[in-house]
Image (tube, rainbow, N blue to C red; front, side):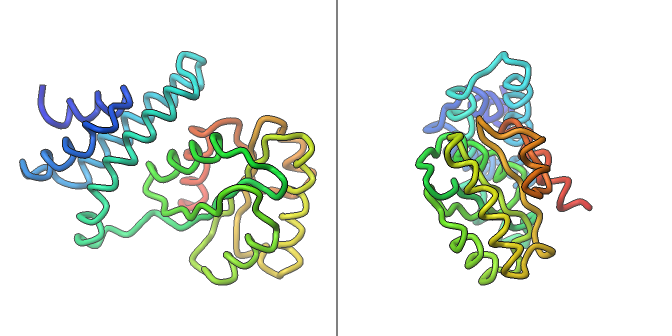
Length: 211
């Protein structure tokens, strides 16, 4: 098995400790950095599709995403040195009052796998914090809001309103997600997109940057 095939398999199986060294081995063998990234993205795509079909679950997605994250940590300095620009810049956070971060972390890692630079504001993020980030980072074009509790769904609405009232709504696209969220609610609060899982979120954010 070649190094890239081995890397693909290790990412899919979530072998985090082996992924970074394999990326370095591929670089040492003269593999193109973009090709190495494409192999890892493809591996995550396979896992994402399996997740969408109900054949893989959150734990498998998380370990695969963490393995990819370990690989990209090795690869990123090389890509930057070669002048490879990120696809775009985004920000993500779990809204005020909600302390859940597993889903949010998974979405962040899947989005990173698409070459998007994404800042993570963490959990229990006030609307003002999102407003401040967008104001200070005009390159940020997508805001990803997560809520896992029915009781924190109003905070999604409050955050969208805060961004609008700050005069920043035309500057960004807003994506929402989380267990209690659906398309109807997303439409109701004026979000640009709702995605049911991390794989779908990653695919959707790429479309934003292509349009």
